[in-house]
Length: 348
Image (cartoon, rainbow, N blue to C red; front, side, top):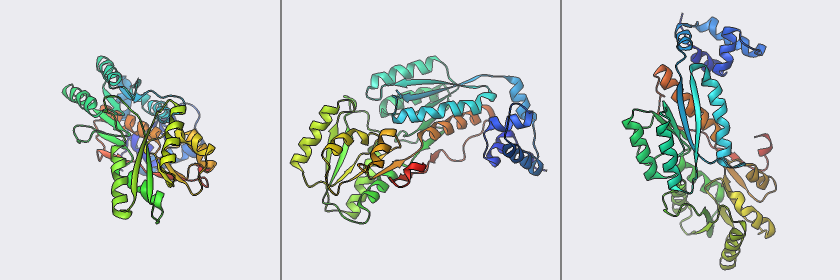
């Protein structure tokens, strides 16, 4: 009979390892359906508890440091941090502990300071959401020198060097998809790309590949289109309104707008006050503010990516490596992209 571990049972049943553990060791309440799923796999595949038991007896603690931008309430990173608790619960039985380190995504010096704190904590593994290419390269080189495995979420370095895994949507393809959804088989004379003003050192550009995919699609499928860009403040609503007002006064014919980060909601107040007939607007990520704009028709479509699952999978991958010395089958794991409209977002 083929013998499997608790991790295999969790994978085969679609249940968390915590739930499987409660079934196997009669700890806590478990639904009848979950119990029957676990027992069915045990009867079919068998179960070898020795490795699992020895790991529990060992009680070795392993710290996973999670490095993310500050999770402001209602932000993209607020969504991402919700995956930390779930991932920590799943892996806690193996002695895995998680600590969140956050930085200001608009300041490279903030990222440097947090990286120093992470190294001082002497982690067993690190989950990183990088915003600053050069600073991240310096950080992961030090992690490599210390033989500390690390996993990227959301984005990764341009050079595929040393990371255990990456979880996120394929950035370039997401830009291609965005362009296709924007045009929907038609053509556009002008397109506005709204961008957020970021760090003064110009090190941070997390959507560069997404933008490249979008522009390549437009060159191939709508070569006569004029692409215009507008930078807006992430914190000054009045300044954003002024910038949009000046733009549309100069370019009144624009009817297609895209924003490649999660902040399409920044331009929504202006578009609601000054609605333009035939406007098509596409953004990314299922933030509450974005969804409200989608529901009322100001935003035409959102491309969502489940950042919480990216973080949860990153924690699981590091746990598997640290505890069982198992590497993921592939390093770069691309998550699915969900297309949300006002007609399907209610059930998302």
